[in-house]
Length: 268
Picture 1 (cartoon, rainbow, N blue to C red):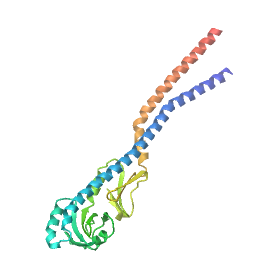
Picture 2: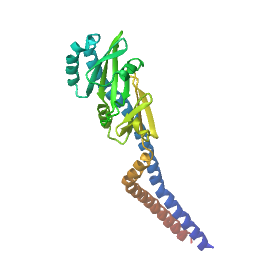
Picture 3: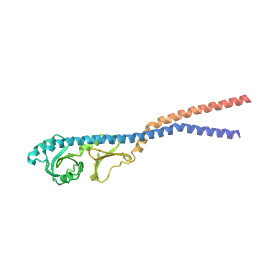
Picture 4: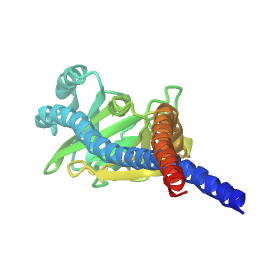
């Protein structure tokens, strides 16, 4: 009977040691996962806010050029064209400037058709993505409209500058700019017909000044990969803590067992 009791006691002690050793490992992993998720959520929110600021700055530079060109609106195209071209060359991201009078585009630094620009001037939007002409360039463009009463200026820039602003955030977060039903991100745009994955910790922010929206999120599976990577880095340390904790408890159990045997021997 005493053999069975001792065997059961040894089994309980073994289970206790396993549980005690696993507690710091499991709790450490849970804390690591919680901290990682919190970090990713905070990074997404901060990055979206900073992206809005950066893209607003790019649009501010475009608007400054528009305001410089606004006094030319209403003048004959022949007399204004040279100055417009000088303004275009002053900022590398610009493709063209177009004058508007009475919501009608009438003078541009490029020979592109003016119908689409007129439609933009009458749309009520301040900024938009333009797919440009259906030619071999396939350059994505962005238009900004600045008006004063019946006269205005449309600034057309290459969207690559906006992508450059998004590329500055090299932390695994996918940032996307939405302009109504059109959008772009560092790896593509709405012409592809499929949005990038932003399922994890997705957040967004509207530009109060220009009306576009920045959407940020991590691709599906990103968090799991980050957790696995963090586990490979922290698990050895946690296992060591678990072994040391179990060792301390084991020594305490052995000491208690020795004390019981000593008292039993004294009793006899």
